[in-house]
Amino acid sequence: MALASRGVLARPRGAAMAAATFAAMSLAMLYTADYVFFEPYVTAHVPDGGEAGLAAIVAMSALSAVALPLGVRAAQAARAARGGAAGGAAGAAVGVVAGACACGPVTIALVGSLGAAGAAAASFLAAYDLPLRLVAIGALCASIYASSAALAPSCRA
Image 1 (cartoon, rainbow, N blue to C red):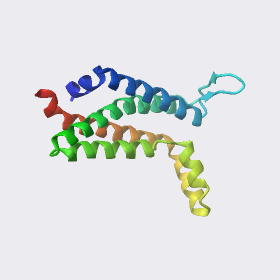
Image 2: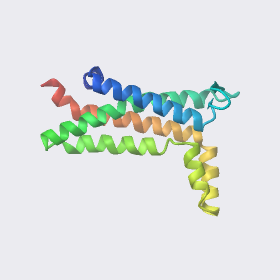
Image 3: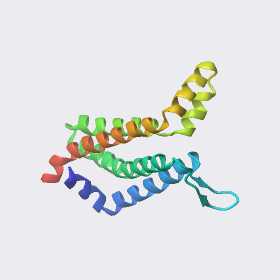
């Protein structure tokens, strides 16, 4: 598993994709969670008791930065082999689900616009923001594992 990760991230294209993913996801999630402000000037602020949320956002960004290049490489390898598409597709699907459930305040705002049921769902999402991020971290770990397992045979050869 570590061999697949090192092989993908050692390539300039994979490293650039990982760096861009980490930077974009970190900034977007930190901004939507009110840890970073851009007006009137760039400021970072961690509220009291917000350390766990900050750590979860950084962990999700780092895991996403590893999962995306691995998923892309696994999909390329599966397409080239035409036989092992299941592992690459499973890893990519888990990664997409993890990314979708980790959007925090954006998801709450979208769900809240759906009326009374949306308001109930928004209050649930707001109350369980950190546990949902922890679930997303687990899903990203599963995505990395599935993508690495799909790439392992091609890395040994």
